[in-house]
Image (cartoon, rainbow, N blue to C red; front, side, top):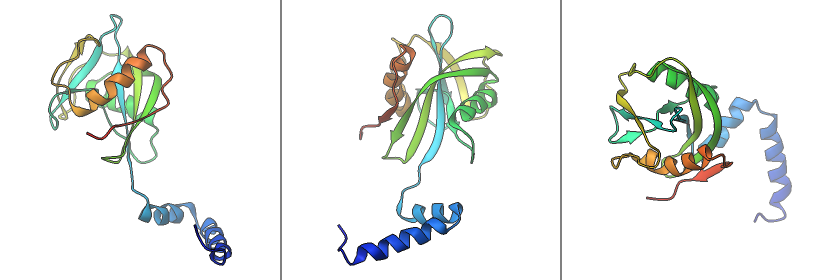
Length: 170
C-alpha cells in the first residue's frame, strides 16, 4: 500500500527498529497493538468423567477453575499454580486449546487435567465453592467463560485436537 518512494525509507526504519533491544521493540509495537491478558483454565476430569467447576466470588455462575498468568509464566505453569493456590491440588495437564476472546483482549489456554495429589478444597478468597458435574448436564447458571469453553472442553476430552478457537461476539 505504500508508494514506491517510501518503501526504501520504511525498510530502513524497520531495520533500525530491529536493532533496538527486544524490550524497547515490545513497548513500541504495543503502542499500536492491543495488549492481551494471558491465562489458563482447567477442565479437571475425575475417574467418573465428571468435571470440577467453581463459583468465583467476583463472577456470577459456575465456571472452570483458573486464572491469569504472572509475567513470564507459561500457561501450563499458570494452570498448575492456580489449582494449587485455589483448590490445594496438584494436577497433570493434558491437551489444551488456545481460546482467543478479542472482545475483552484475553487469550486463555483451556487444559484437560487430572488430579495427581490432594483433595479439592476451597483455599482462596477468590472461590465460594466447588462441585463435580456431569459434562453432559452442566449447570444452567454457567458464566460466560464456561459457556464458551465447554464446547472446546468436550472436544478436548474426546481426544480431538483443537489448536485455536476465537470467541464469537455476544
